[in-house]
Length: 230
Length: 385
Image 1 (cartoon, each protein chain N blue to C red):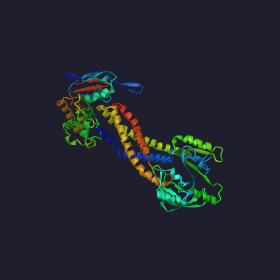
Image 2 (tube, rainbow over the protein chains, first blue to last red):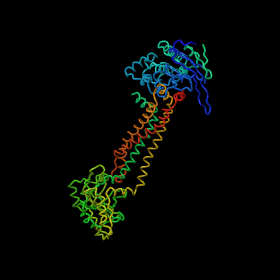
Image 3 (cartoon, rainbow over the protein chains, first blue to last red):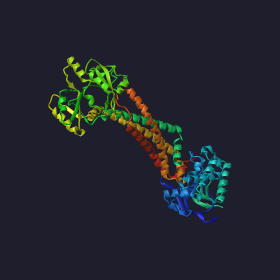
Image 4 (cartoon, rainbow over the protein chains, first blue to last red):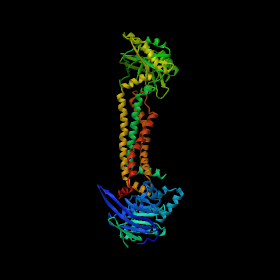
């Protein structure tokens, strides 16, 4: 599939393996592909195919064994841990299967969390968080703790947290995996809106073909190798 | 602000666990403070000693007396400004449980050497003219309810018979560290009574207390006093009042050492409990730490969260523990009566309690913070769900 614009993610000959006892188990083998800015792609494949590992590498929370991985012009494979942390804060929004909200913080405070790493003033942070929460339809839940929200609402808070810093890419690992169908549809619709209205590049790992249909493109991984599907 | 909020809310997440840990800390800090206060009380006599006073005793042992005739010879020495003497009496008031120190002293000179014993002049005058009169300290008076004019009988253990005294004066301490649990009466009364009873050793004193003009000359004057009585009937041993008092402490040093060890063991035990709590806490939150790392927060932030929580718990335990030390020490002091003449929580003890709590807070967080800071994000996230 041709990328519709300049690639924002450029992957070349990416390899990754894990050590299991004395053995090294290859997870990704010579992966090469591009993701264009504004694209919404789904990574699919059976368990153990390496799709989450690929997502982690793109998000900069894991390091490849070989190859190059350029995101928004930066070869993140060469960055140190501290540099990667700064890079992630500025460039990546995370959406996890189990939401990963801080249980002791309110919805507002959870969304505000990534902004604490920026130089924004308190008032500016408040305005941004209010806007983000209203975009995900939770303007009336700002003072609620995660335990006081449904799964779908928690995931919407997590999505607001993911895009609050206006990152270059949003990475979503099974974002609907823990939700019922109706909530999953809401989340997918929200991701589609973020992609269409804000132009966010979204890379989503999913098992669910229904969820994958929200993406512009689907990349299949099989035993650590990429299998491009229409 | 968020950082502090996270620390406090995390600390209160498992209220029962945090509450029990704080309770453990309170007990440990309280026990530590109380034991340190007992050790301080042990040394209070030495702490209250004056650098300008020397004590001369029999070189063989404190049990053996010295002739009263030594007084004039010592008084004439250069550098000596005053001299007095005292005998340990060792009487029992009603039962042996009611222990307090009693001394037969030279009424006219003894109190001039101890300006820290503050006696109203009228009461002092009444004491001097009454040979059966006695002076008691405020703590002793309060413990047994003695008032000026009260009869105070003592059953002698060294000097046989019942000795009936009348309380003529009550002294207060010039400082909080002044021992006000003692009783003083006329040496003349003791000496004459013993003479009448036909005792062999009369005109003898237990110790001489010597006031010197310059504390820097203490060693030299001590040497000269002892040299003066070398090869005499009763050779002397002269030392500073502080060294004399520490000599008593050294007799029971094993107990003091044991108390000191126990006080630190208590802190070590609570450190183990606290470390376990923090390790458990950090293990449960490993996915949250991984999430924070993924969002861009560095290892220092995570370590700060864990250290902050541990220190917050330690602070709560320290504040409550220190606050409780005062009433508990007061109650303990009342229970033991005059066994510890000076029993008070010192500023040093409070600082040590605070330092021990802070050390526990820091040490308990060290390993969990190190692990949280180093955990790979992917591994941490995998522990979720």
